[in-house]
Image (cartoon, rainbow, N blue to C red; front, side):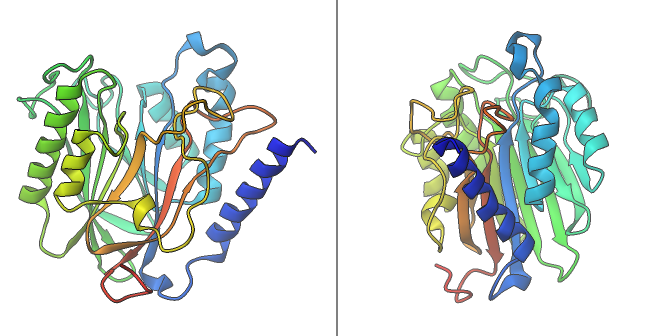
Length: 295
């Protein structure tokens, strides 16, 4: 067997085994989070266009079973496909053009059996966050989608935020980080854990992400209890082994969430990729202090 194909198969078996085996130890407090830029639907992608790869992507989600999933670059037609293919999930959040189906979205998908949605909304990363707008030096309008969630099994509360930062505007990313930290501080309830998902178009050393980390969020990769698996790169550009070993898609957690496992899933299907980004996965534990060896 091709060595690359063998490695991908081994990685998939490890992740699938984790998904089916369930959490160990303090497993009652554990849930899986994922962030995934699914690449917008455009004919320009040729053999990699949405119609040719959507079933691959849906298969990944069904296997991995994240309880909370943040997606980016979701166009209205893709949203409709998600709703139809994944009936176990609520798809939350509208498009950046201002209507429910208006333009590109960064939705949150929430497993109906795991979490109950208390409230949901979105805002624009700009000086006018309450209406469609493009902020600072951004090339496009950028949004954040949020939801207050309650876990059905035990009532634990979670504030989940999903975002997609601009790929051009350095100032837009920095100001967006300041805006996001201010919004979380103002809207987080006292008993809520915090989870931030997204394609940030930035490495962790950039001032924008350092702003989030300085505000008390932690990088899930750095916080993981078990050994980290998968490649360093999260953007693959339709290549199985990316040239740049950089992570621009991140999972960030507040102080009351521990991270058991973290993985970038570099899976392919006989040379085909489900997106030009790899999904990023973290198994998280509520009530981190003093539990399960959490930090």
